[in-house]
Amino acid sequence: MKLTNPQAVVYLPGIGSADNLCPVEVQNILAGTTHLGIGAHPDDVEFMMWQGILQCFQSADSHFASVVITNGQGSSRVGTYADYSDGQMITVRLKEQSCAAEVGGYVASVSLGYTSQELRQTAKDRVCADIKEIVRCMRPRVIYTHNLADRHDSHVAALLRTLQALRELGPDYYPQEFYGCEVWRSLDWLTGSDRRICDVGEHPNLMRALMGVYDSQIAGGKSYDAANFGRRQSNATYNDAYHADNASMLELTMDLRPLLADPALSPAEYFAQMHKRFGDDVQERLLSMS
Image 1 (spheres, one colour):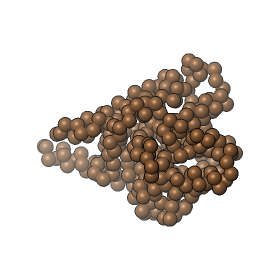
Image 2: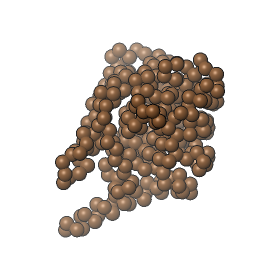
Image 3: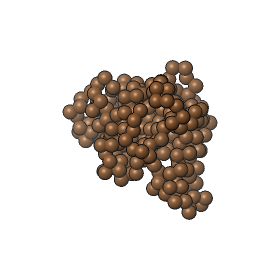
Image 4: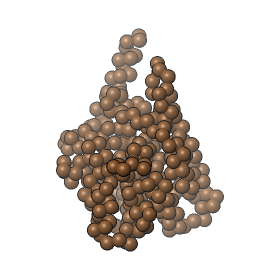
């Protein structure tokens, strides 16, 4: 696998750097990937893709790999990390990401090493080329990334680069399933088939451990671990107004497969369609109760 960014790192749990193996051995390992998570920042994968991680954990035939596009140098810094330079933060976050891959039993953790500005603007084609190379090598049947309605610019950029890469690769490389996940905006507003509901109540200690390795972020003044558990517990409780809960935690995702089924469909137009279905649902309820 040849990535365009010289700062990219391919980490293989149990082995270490992919540089320790010959290219053919690396290719054979990566080809075992069935579920691929693509996030903008170190920690995004573990904060939003529980369903994929849990499906693959200790599975004989399903295997998870993560891709993180940016290097995390812009992270907030307080307490222990207050005086860390950008370079030191990159090192810390790379170690955290590798630790998560070990704990979660991933096939691989790929750090592309771009800055947020490069992801959003100045290296869009290079990011896309790297994602294409990764998908070519792994050929996953399920891909998770950010959702169209996320309010973080880098998250939206990560989704758009992923979509561009898949469309350029063509149908032979399309995953069977393609989902956008919750981070900086919840997805409980989605209606019908636009919203996919996943039971992620299994192995809560594993998920706590995976999020807990990102000490540099949680110690930085953001209780991401508690917030992510709370969101999924809230999803479970508020999923059905008329029946007792049948799950302790639910993860909501946006179905992105229509963007592959119709390459002419723009992300903006697809979002407008979903938004209209939401609006129609609200309007119908208001009118019926008037």
